[in-house]
Image 1 (cartoon, rainbow, N blue to C red):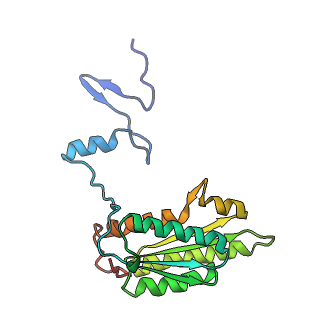
Image 2 (cartoon, helix red, strand yellow):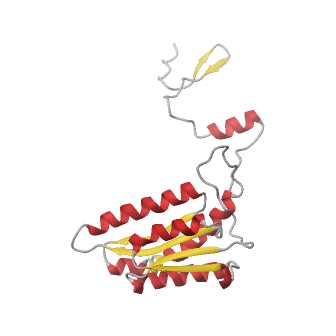
Image 3 (spheres, rainbow, N blue to C red):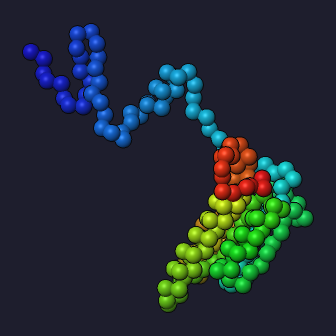
Length: 207
């Protein structure tokens, strides 16, 4: 007598192989491949290249903690220039602090003159919880500007517990957030050009 078939494992009935259904939400490792072979195609991947045409870019940067933000700006400018963006197609807007970044970023994104906007700043934790309110409001406002304008607005505001950690992320051992922001801007501009627009979208991208 054959041993009982374990629950959840394949079984045999005559010459047919039966597979027990998987739990809802689980997929076999080869599920995507199986579907693509069955349908005669592969999933379509959409990616943005790191190439630049005649696009213009804007950078909004906080003057507060300038010893950090200046290095973020240097990283962003160097990255844009490395990928072929000339100085005359880069606009840099200085604001007093990170809290003032969103309103200027929103104005630039809606102006129709820029393919993307990079937001650079540094909020370092102090002895109070003031930084938490700043970080939440700034990140939310930047996200909303991107969604409703249809223009990529990149978050390059450092939120670190110490100045040392901020410096590490501004050209130190942990890279440069300004450079990462510029790369993301170029990639997103090219990606959005490949993504179909909705019929009733809330934003109207200038890219």
